[in-house]
Length: 130
Image (cartoon, rainbow, N blue to C red; front, side):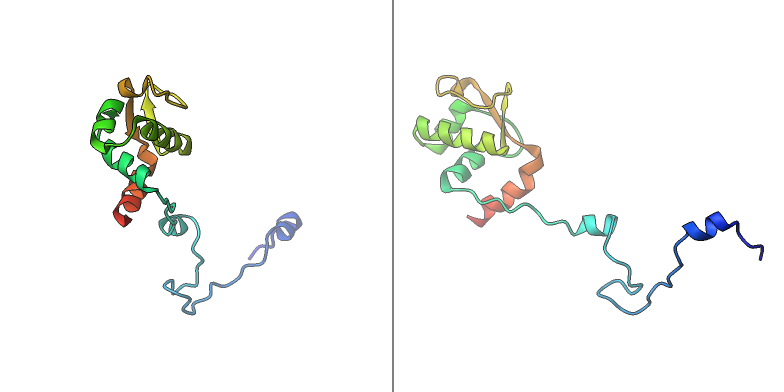
C-alpha cells in the first residue's frame, strides 16, 4: 500500500471494530440512533379534567364544530364552556376558525372550533382513559 500524506494520517481517528456481542435486540451492538431512536419516541402524556374531556368529545376529531353546538352537546353553563375552551386553546389542543388566542362569551356561539391535528392521537388516548 502506498503511504498517505502526513496531513490525512493525523486527522483520521483510529478504526474501531464493531462489537458483535448481543446487546438488547440489536445483535451488531449498534446504538439506537437516528431512525431507530425516532421509532421509540414516547407520546406526550395528556391529562384532561372532566370538563375538558367533555368539550373535546363534543368537538370531535373529524370536523370543526360551532360554539353553539358545543354548548348544546355538553349541557354545561356557557361560562364554563368558554373558560374550558380558552384553556384548551391556550394549551394548543384546540384551534379556532377564524384564529383567535382567546374567545369571548359573546362571540363563542358563532366561532368554529377544531382539535389541533398534532394532538389528535394523544387526546384520543386521554379521553379513552376516562
